[in-house]
Amino acid sequence: MSILLSLLILVSFIFLGLEWMYPCLILFAGTLMGMGVIAMGTGESERRFVMETCFAALLLRICLILPFFILSYTGEGFHPGSYFATDGYAYSQNGWQIAQAWQKGVAIDSKLLFTTLTGSAPGAYEYWNAFIYSFTGGSPLPLFFINSLIGVASSLAVFFFTKKFFGIKSAKIALLLSAFCPSLVFWSTQNLKDPVINLVIFTLIWSVIEIHRRPNFWFILVGLCSSFVLMKLRSQVFILIFLIVPIWLVTRTFLYKKMKPILLILVISVGAFKGIQIQETLRHTMEQKTMENAPKIFSRDTGSFVEWAHYLREVRATGGSAFLKGFDLRSPKKFILFLPLTVIYCLFAPFPWQGGGGLFSFLAVFEMSLLYLFFPYIVRGIRYALKSQRDQTDLILLTFFCISLLLVIIESNVGTLFRHRSMILYFILIFLAVGLSESKKIGIPEEPGAPQ
Image (cartoon, rainbow, N blue to C red):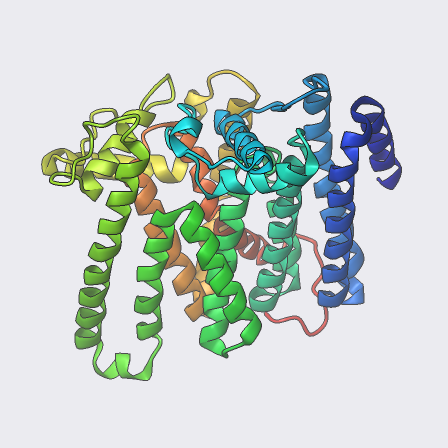
């Protein structure tokens, strides 16, 4: 593998010249850090397996990125690269313009940077793009490589989490599944914020679990950092987790067993009150972001979460992959009628007959077909997890349910639904790994002394 990676670097250097230096340094530094983490966090019996798997996962992502990037290279000025998702181009374009403004000392005007591709003015992820561009030049290749490293780091986090709570056998399977899952590989080869969001959601939930078990400075720090990043990149999900965690913590206390109804009512009331306050802030934020594109959708008198969610459904219900166009959040009857169908779509779409054309559609249907095939193992994994690690599994399932409900409400396009569902995919893969590890057909040996 190292020979193949060296060959790829050499060929890319011929085509890209000195512009290859920065992404090469990023890859080198990221690989060294990853090897250090693996060396410190794994035993001798598993170290080689984990290192080889992570290296193969990174190499796969590089092999997918480089051919398209080299073929589209222009050699001068801003180079947008090659994007399967149009959001990636918009993030790069805004980031490049912001970086140019920083270099010239010009004040940044969000209205001038507004793009129709993202449907909003630049956000935190565009400024992250600008930060990378400010010292790597006009090539977005470092951004692609950083996301690839984040994707592999997420798989490594899944491994350590699963090993700690469900044993080494489940952890090895979870590492393989998360490292080579088609959609997770695909998103981490694009300049999208999804890999970062998926990682911070996972680390935030893990941090909450660890802090509840035993307060630890490092997990507190990781939890705070993850919360900040998630708030900046996906505020709706942050709000949900902000409301979920107190409820989960209360249900773990001794008083809960004695005063269950009173505590539940208190937590739900406080949560609803704070949720309304946060939602009001979110409404004003969304009003500012969308006033250029849809000025009649929001007003200070009528804007609400329902209006915002309905607007998102209307915007995304385009093309042949749109589904349930008659689902209207503003109509209670239609909401009740269509809600079961939206839940089914959220969990199981795209269906085989929605494949359409193109490589992405093929990968989506292929991945979902595998999940259908292994669905009994996912259910088995959940049942086993509830028996062996009830507290942790309750929080994971609660997070899974609430994020799924959010997707049910705002999504109306199979493509965006499939992409945003990656926020909960790591949890699904962990349960699948646990279910497979309980099967005698899976021949991965346990490490002596591993938790069962």
